[in-house]
Image (tube, rainbow, N blue to C red):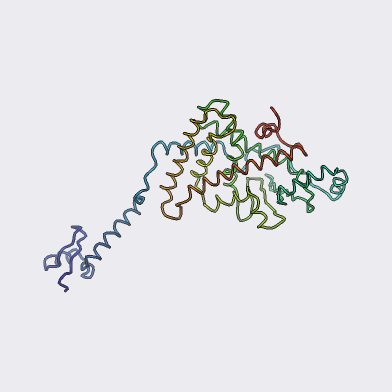
Length: 357
């Protein structure tokens, strides 16, 4: 036996020099002799292993990852509860919507002949705006029937007019859910009515995108909304698809595998933005937005420890900034489309200022 050999005793939780007495005690505990002879380094490694397994067993986070405060937990719970009450990703109650018109070859010839040069130029601009990305629609009936709509092969730009009324109906349905979401949040109800209206007009489109992302299938480029499925068919291939900022946005949260808590906090940060046009309670909104941002950062640090998610908070904030830019582009496109082919519902007219109403 080595002179400096020591004994690790699991009952006394200490190390002792090997003697006849300690050896007999360990043998009495039915431990094999090889298990009780350990060097000082091995003893320390054993202790470290026990501590690590204990942390894993009880779910203790590494140093620096503090638990959320009670206030932060309450904020997240309220947002998630509100989201569940007001979100209908499978479009359960979406009824009496308009369906796109199916274009025929005769319709194509007639439409091209009746277009003026100015109108043709406008539709050409619309085609450039949309980067030739076409949307196919599938409707599954309760009786098991399936109705498919695919946009025509030709690409004058005007073919999108057939789909616009349906998309306006679908957008209006989602916008109503967002408005209900905001109205239920206690922090929002405490604001002045004027500021509530300004925030909703500015942020509704942005708040819709995280919700839509939860039903987006990145592999098939399809939004699976219950009986309805919207599939992207990029004429220019996948690379051209990625040129569309709104489509790039929908791929990013899926890549990051965001939690439901992160989705709702994204929406709250976007909603309570102090720099929206027409807002008066800027200081209060700035404080509220900061609290939601701090909560998001704390949630990520606590629930996603490790270097892999070190920059997740910054990536989410960058996505929100990108959404602001996308919203401006989206509004400009809608204004051009509305000018050529009036399609907007009363709600979308108010949200995007198509009229002075």
